[in-house]
Image (cartoon, rainbow, N blue to C red; front, side, top):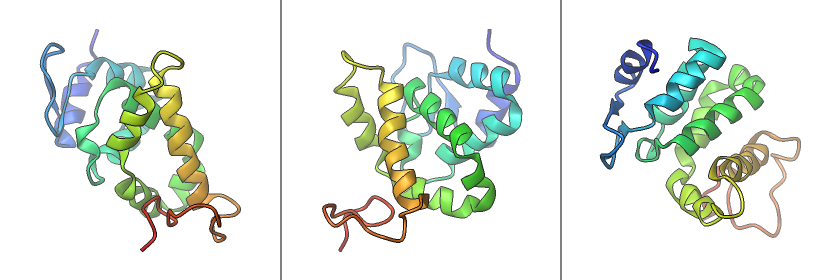
Length: 152
């Protein structure tokens, strides 16, 4: 059962719900049930943070599937202190993140692990790289900058 608030929340963030048999376009999702379950389990404030993280950042409206939505929810819960301390930096990180590419990479593991858990791991590595205790010190063996983009 879909919570009646979900379509309203999605519309507020510029996301359109499509039939589950339809291939979603940018800004569309067929994972309305995932948002409904997140809303029921964690409340409206948490659901809004998940929506903000995905809808108010670059390129992330193209990856609004169940695995990405749940991975984002997991990371919003795990990183709540980061969001409360500097929401702008949180969104900047997600802006720079190639979420579609990470999703495709994690999908390669679908026979081994759930895509959701794989996505949590690869995204969390980027969060720790940006906000963790060694964030100011770059990894000498990595060509990515502090936001996950290749250094120029």
